[in-house]
Structure formats: C-alpha cells, structure tokens
Image: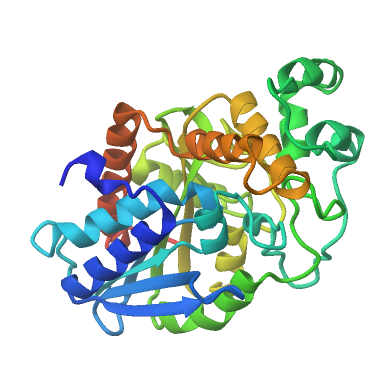
Length: 361
C-alpha cells in the first residue's frame, strides 16, 4: 500500500476502511453511535489476547478534523496483516477510531456543541467554568461575530496583542482551554460531553486487567512541519518523564512547559491516568507538526466564523473548510510519507516499551 492510499479522503471512507480491515484481520469490531445522527460512530477494533497484561492503545480524531493521520496509521496497521504486525503473547491492541466523528466528517475540530474534547475531561471536583484572563481580552480577535472574509487579516490584527502579551504567554492563554465562551475556540464545555460519557462507560471494559498501558493519542497541527513530539501531562513524575524519554527518545518526549507543550485543562491524558491510577498508564499525545501556528490559528478562526455566522453552502464556508483540512492534514505527499512512517514506528516502539523489564511506576 502506498502512502497516497493510506490516507482516506473523508470520514465515511476512513470509517469503511477501518471496519473492513479490522474484520479481515480478525479483530473484534465494535460500532458505537456517538451523535444524534446515528451514521456518525466511534469504531473500535480490539486484537490480541482476551485479557492482556500489556495493552497498546492508539486513538484518533479526538479533535475531529485531525483524524486523517491517526486513521491512516490505524488502518495501515490493520491492512498490513499479522505478518507485519504480530501481537506478542500477553499483549492487546486497542484502536479507537474517530473519537469525534462529527468533527471528522464536518471538517471541524470540535463536537456538535462546539466543545474541544481535549479540554472536556476535567477531573472530579473541577468546575466547568473559568477562562484565562488574557483570553477574555482577545476574544474579539479570536472569535469575530461575522462570516470569514478574504483575505484573513489575523496576522496584522494580532500583532498588537502579541507585542503586549508575548507570543508564548498568548499561546497558553488561547489554547489552554476556556469555559465561558461557548461559541469560541478551545471551549471546554459546560459539562461532560457525549464522547467523555462514552469513554467513562467503555474504557474500563477495554483496559480490563492490563497492568501496563501505553496510549498514543494522535494529533496534528502543533510544532515544526513533519516533526513528531510526544507530549506528557504535567502530572507525570520527573522519574517517569526520564524513563519514557530514554525509551521513546529525549528529542521527542516533552513535558508540560517544555518545547511546544503547554498546560491545558481537561485533557484526555490526565483523565485516563486518574481513572486507571491503580496501574501504569503511560499516555503520550503524539503531535505532528503541519504549518505555522499563525496559519493553523487563522484556519481555526475562519472555520469557526463560517460555522456559526456563515452560510453552509457558500464559497467562503467551503474555502474555510478546505483550509482547515489542509492545516491539519496537509496534502503534500512528503509530509504524509514522513508522518505516517514516524507514527507507525512509534506504535512499534510502544509494544517494546510495554514489555520493558525495567518498567517503573
């Protein structure tokens, strides 16, 4: 299979391929309607031992439109067959396809309620409220209440804010998560999302008795073009950071506050580790760079404006959708070849890490 064939052009094609490949490979396939439209589903493929002591999890599409690469990685594993991807005795492989099928299908980064799902997994006792003070100051810039225009003047308009607050501080304020602007970017919701409730119900069954889990959650859009960074939650201990860095590469593993990583509220990783605190649960956000942060943010802003204040079928809306897909799934064959290869190599490494005899909590 060529790289061009690995990437599906849209959500329906990606889902059909995932289901077909999982069935052909002999994996246990589950299909879960996740939205009011029952044609939108989270599809789950489970392979390996029935009750594995070691489990590798690969999830895709938590951020909707970012699902193209994650789906390509998952489908490539399944379509390659058992000869290329043997599962060691005692191991399980759990593939979670399109955790936000609405966003994947509609070319959005969020769910039908405009919720950024990777800001929705607040822990017990945390309130779905509050926003960084600087987010409030620049809401007018991030979320104009008008359809997108052409050209988009985001860069020019943002220069005063960047000079006033500093680029790194502004990045944390924008992308860390906010809970007070329901139509704005990076909105974490006013309560648990459908996807969160679904994972709360199903994850304990899938994880089962595994005492060591390595979970790769695939994302795109952050970092240098084609680069892979494995981002760890800020709750991970320094010893664990060093252990994972030794195994996945110190040039790739980044802790919160280092490199491109930044603190967020309500991330899936923190929730997984808190839910399965009785075992070793290594959660790595596999982030693949695409374009500059300004271009990605401009694409997000334009699509959000089109979704809330534009007309579904007009030229500006179509242009915004296509620009968002390009921002998170570049059509460049070189980018696709490089990121797919890195993603598959990282999954292989995850299996080795699962059985590392020096594993420590």
